[in-house]
Amino acid sequence: MAKSVSPGAISSIMSNPNPDSSVDLSEIVVQVLDIKSAGNRYTFTVTDGKNKLKAILQSSLSSEVINGNIQNLVLIRITDYTLNDIPNKNEKYLIVTKCEAVSPPLEAEIKAEVKSEDTGIVLKPKQEVVTKSAAQIIHEQNGNMAPAARTSMTRRVHPLASLNPYQGNWTIKVRLTAKGTMRHYKNSRGEGCVFNVELTDEDGTQIQATMFNEAARKFFDVFEMGKVYYISKGTLKVANKQFKTVQNDYEMTLNENSQVEVAINEAAFIPETMFNFVPIDQLGPYVQQKELIDVIGVVQNVSPTMSIRRKIDNETIPKRDITIADDTKKTVTVSLWGGLATDLGQKLLDMANDSPIVAIKSLRVSDFQGVSLSTVAKSIIEINPDSPDSQKLKSWYCSEGKETTMESLGSTLSPSMKSGGRSMYTDRVTLDHITSNPSLGEEKPVFYSTRACMSMIKSDQTMYYRACKTCNKKVTEEIGSGYWCQGCQKTETDCSLRYILSAKFSDASGGAWFSVFSDDAEKIIGCPADELDKMKSQDDSSDFQTQLKKATWVPHLLRLMVAPREYNNEKRQRITVKSVCPVDFAAESKLLLEEISLMKA
Image (cartoon, rainbow, N blue to C red; front, side, top):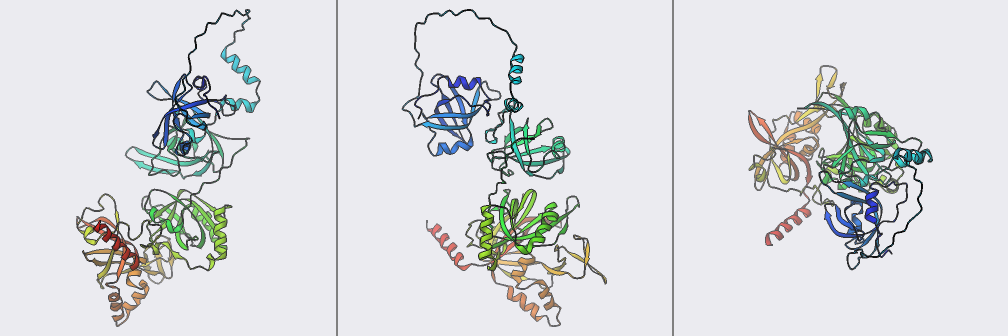
């Protein structure tokens, strides 16, 4: 191990602020001083015994500090770096992107000894000096190099991990691993368009890049999935944690002056799509969150394509639902939109009998039907990927999963859910807490869980509507020709009934009226809407009344959404049931014991 620093190391760094990655650096060994934490990075000072320089350790090297390899007074060998100017400050920062510890902590800071020696003057014969301009020297050097070497000298490629907002000129070499659709928007400043891409470098580091208006139109057709690009003249800013979709502290913006060049005739690296799979039974905590998730599962069912009319612009969008399962023995519905519904969705429909494996990146988790997943513009779907996770899941399904009874995750969100996430015991409140706070949900809907019984239901209300069997939207009866669905834009000979009712629920603190729909209402009433309608249409409606009476005063665990509504120019609370579960009395008892323990403490 090295026991001393490299003489003149700081001067060497200052004279070569952006070393060429293709050229071996002379050995740079420096001592670490005053190391401090700065968020997820570390700042420190490096010294060669004579000069000092402020430095930042790249976040990917933070683990070296955490495990104690890099600490105060150790010697490190720097193998890659960038020297940056700090805006509005007359100082420089050394960004250390690659280094290694070469000694344990020394006893003290190294300081160079100043030696005073008498040295004589040595006269050398006069040599003829040929004066050349800098341009001539560079031209001669380039003329003696092969084309690839000249490119290497003029283009220094920076790893994504080394980029930060304070850098000026940089060039990255990345592969396009995700491309969003062109989105159009309108706001107070006018109309515009925007699209996003995800870029991955050779080390597997990812970053999201966004382009607006002219830049979006300029580069939308340039970027193609899977191709490798050299990109420069972009800007970086700290990523918004609420909206970021990749693991990077920064996000990139490309404008119309940015340079994007396809890497041609070069050895192209192939970074794999980076997945971070979430098991289906652990999706609870992600419901209604900004974070996008990745899943892998066996396809159980593929629905036909349906057309959904978007309220914002009245545009019709294709949609297809698939149901997937994994080795947690839970299923979840994934809604595919746009091209994914028509192209990959059709491919999955053709393969459905073979139970293909799908790996899906970037899905939004919603509380529709308890828990459901939905693709977004940047979602990626891989069918039967060649990966250990895929092979493991396929092996499980062939050996035991095929014969296993699967449960829908939305119907099993219960207190005993092992994920400990958004279960029926999350945000548990009494009904009095909701009704005594009329301002709840004014800014945005709020969600609570409660335990209550249906105490009253008006039997003369309209409890259900005629729905399309494909998209579940309301249909209009056409005399003698069936039922017209506005969503699917077609007439069907038959339809189904779906619940839409209002009922009063009560607990020990009071009562409130809830709106209940479809599957959740079926769990509470105890039978499908079609069956209840048959009971009501009989001459003797006693079975109908008996069914409603039987459904009252049965305890349920309910997930509620509270939002305001306006009725006769008066704001009122609207409480909607989002999911229903039977009471788990063992878990309920455990909760009560925990509350008693807290009261004693």
